[in-house]
Picture (spheres, rainbow, N blue to C red):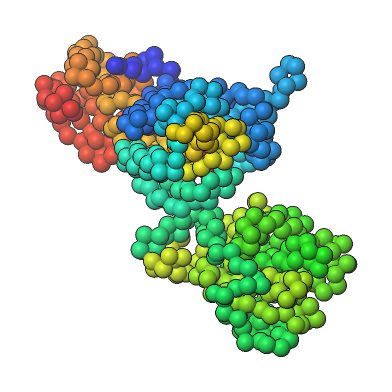
Length: 594
Ligand code: ATP
Ligand code: MG
Ligand code: MG
Ligand code: MG
């Protein structure tokens, strides 16, 4: 196929778009691949669509290869299914909500777990129907807080999302592994370097989750890795919490030697992560990334009384909603609210405060009085580099938890704190190094969360209803395209890998003589006949300089110049990436390029 620049719908730009922060964004707009319609929302022009189709096709082929079947869902959806799973609320401001003319609530889907679950529920009834795996390559909507970097974080973007349905965990594991392997192939074919990291299952629910991060300094995710192969998103590091410990019965715990009335000083003294200072305050060990102090009030309510991160990033407790329970490992999902003014008035032993700057903890935080008579336990089963202490009295009243640990999810209040270089990896596989990356793909073993809330059950071998177990798997298709552009460029423009380029060859015709025009036309026809996709710069009026500039900006891997040397039967064949150019006899040109 030949795309002629004399009539291709394309206007290249000299100036970078004003809102563009990253190179791929600038170049994709300047080279006429995409055009901004609104913040985070882009129109696709002919060349952009060509590349997009190639990226989609790689994803499609690898999905088909693992037996997934393609379907296509609407983006405009009713509220009810998302209400049933609570995601109508949970998604918060990121969800585009709207109403139809009758006032019925609807949404633009950010992801489709609910709809796939309902479709399978609609049509399948028996374990004999399973396993099944469905996917789509479809437009998603998320009202991202900071749409930036063009396609890398859009508010409308294309995702490949697939969903696996199995009768048991073994089946789910197979589907998960198949996707993992398929994703490795997809990113290999896209030429994107990937680090697979442990991820937080978070709002998706479910047990196991991994992200495919593409390391790049412009990435918005921070991950840690060790030489021994450990890799995790820092968001996920704190999910490696110790086993739940019953504070009143902890056989595996080390009981501190504080038989009678330990004070807060003995606690500090015997802990290995808080150090008393001369002025009476404490400093937390350097290795700590944040400190959380939660208490169970005498009336049994759990409250957060202090929270801190290193440096001067003090945290406003009124805005903290954090599941400290999960962090503590006490009973899993224990909600801990921030203590209010009333609490502080009601219980004078609580000292209001935050920790920081510099990890300094107010020595009086728990109050000496309240510490009296309480046995403390230091649990050694902690994430390396973090520690936690639980304390309780025999009656179960005045139970205190003093925790210091790593990053934890605080719903946007605390930005991911950096884990420091040199910290030990949680699995002991060496020292951690930190790096930035972009999330290109994400795989989740969801388990029964969605099937349960939406009632997806099938009859098992014994004729009993059994809940189906699911996985969900996403690849950011438009994000992948942008990441490829980001990693393949120079100061003159894009440099597409051949398998993704909008054409194989870019023929530049300089000069207007019939000899040159006829020669260029003949060469283009030969290239096309040889099965190559060609961009042909046949513009009669553009200068050679403009034509060369555009060829470099567009980024097709091979540029052929039909011009000066043509009278001697020569064309110039230039490699866009290396810049290497050589004179080739016209007769050999096609063979050279193939
Ligand atoms: P991120 O952490 O970057 O916000 P996410 O974890 O919210 O991504 P998922 O819900 O896991 O994204 O969606 C699956 C995939 O969709 C992601 O791995 C990513 O490649 C892509 N994706 C998510 N949000 C966007 C976006 N705003 N623009 C482009 N692609 C996106
Ligand atoms: Mg997101
Ligand atoms: Mg993410
Ligand atoms: Mg994700």
